[in-house]
Length: 213
Image (cartoon, rainbow, N blue to C red; front, side):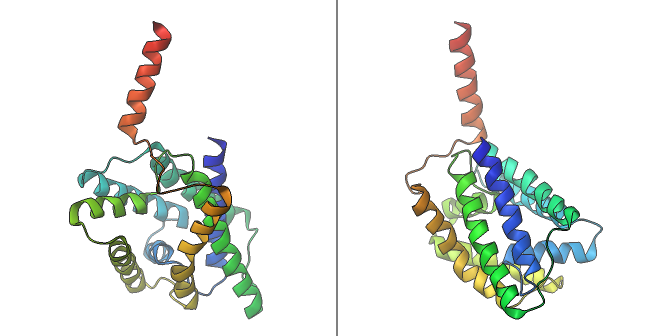
């Protein structure tokens, strides 16, 4: 469980590093910032609302989220806002500094994802939606992911979210960053079995019965 929250902190920090590079955010963060532009919500709150909506859609499509999915929706948003309030990040003045911040953010998000997914308590809301659509459509993973991210980016762009060269770099390298972290950590995502909320509840119930007996 400690790795779960370390993952959330790193994911939130990496996201803020990418935002503060001021080179363009990842597709989902473009949407979050677009929502912030037209509402009194903070960046973290916008991510929580989007996460809840995505998990709800995934559930309607018969994909039950895991505890980690719900926790990531809640705590990544909280940690993103804490980092904002602390004011520890600023936009570098030099272009090289901004690119360095972008790359550091991509690496940090990759490791954050690795730490919370390797607990096998559920993926993030976005991946839950991807799995739900995969089951319903039987389309290739790349097509589903590209479709989701393109739709999210388009809406974020309409809401005047920050689209730039960083958006393209993040979209093209974030998957590699996560995959590299998995490889270094020795985690095989293909063989992993995540517990959803129903399975976790059944497991706890069985453990309690064994303890009482």
